[in-house]
Image (cartoon, rainbow, N blue to C red; front, side):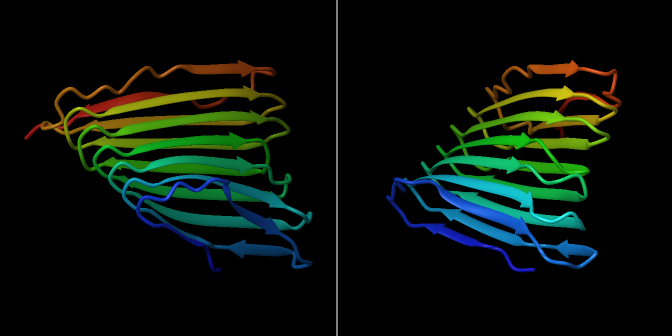
Length: 219
């Protein structure tokens, strides 16, 4: 499958959101889509990106996406993921974010549908004074399954990261949250922020919960 390429040149502020929409249609009994996205935001630029996953048929569908996002110096990125597939669709979403000095990246993930949704997110802070904020809302039921697996790698001093995930789980659904923060020895004055995790289990359905794991790398 193909994907999308988004390039925001230097010193550009995009006034309107850019929306990437994944609609699954067709009459095949089972479908596999593997889109790959490349997003590059140049120095001192700002953009808002919305990704939306939604299947329009009742056939079994698996979407395996890979997105690479490069946030250059002093760039600001607001990123939204809306996942609202039907009960026969599954999504594996892999996102890799590379941030440079003074960049600001924020991700909001809304997981509402699908049989299986797995979000794998890795953020690499490659300079000083970087801000990384990731938030997620999950509302599922009827034997649905949603994973959130996050990694934030602090490589340089004076950087901040924040994570905030909330969920409502009902009707034998399964929710998984697995968060990691890796702090290099050189990354002095790192602030990994608070990790509020709010869960409403409407039918004793929450099966797996992995609390945040912090790893301080030493040599």
